[in-house]
Length: 160
Ligand code: THU
Image 1 (cartoon, rainbow, N blue to C red):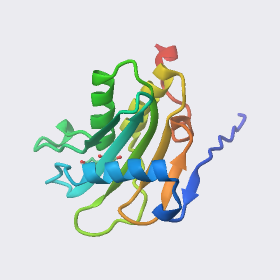
Image 2 (image 1 turned 135 degrees about the vertical axis):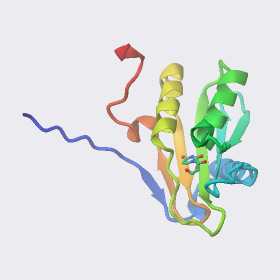
Image 3 (image 1 turned 180 degrees about the vertical axis):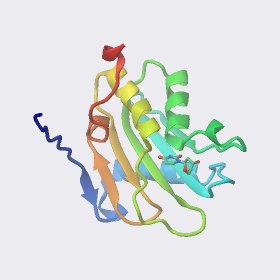
Image 4 (image 1 turned 180 degrees about the horizontal axis):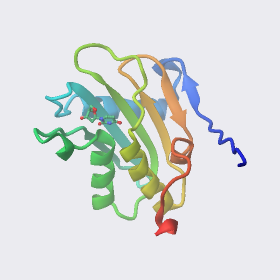
């Protein structure tokens, strides 16, 4: 057996103050969306904001359900709305802000595996990388230049 090492690269901003202004604006939009999350079961609210290449900003938040698996994450709520409304637009950037409603989460909230798979689909469809920024309610902001940094060995249409 041969072992293969897969490396990845992310950026870390120690605080929101260090993030470039246009990104800060998108994170702010995600934070506003987070405030409207429907998360009565987990009490963990997440907001996502997408910047499209037509200038539109699409936001989403987690939508939970008494039948737990029927709920949806903030990222996919925003992604599917964007895909349904602007099918030809490319996604330039995605900002995610999340944390418990009972405190000030300082751990950056990374997109879950299912959301990574969904982001990958759009990245492949549009043939350009999507910049991803994620953070807690306070603290560090993590940047990835592309979804591919967050999901190696992806399953995509080439395998169908
Ligand atoms: N959640 C998101 O909306 N996005 C993520 O990336 C992580 C998790 C939601 C799903 C659920 O409503 C709550 O956070 C707790 O898992």
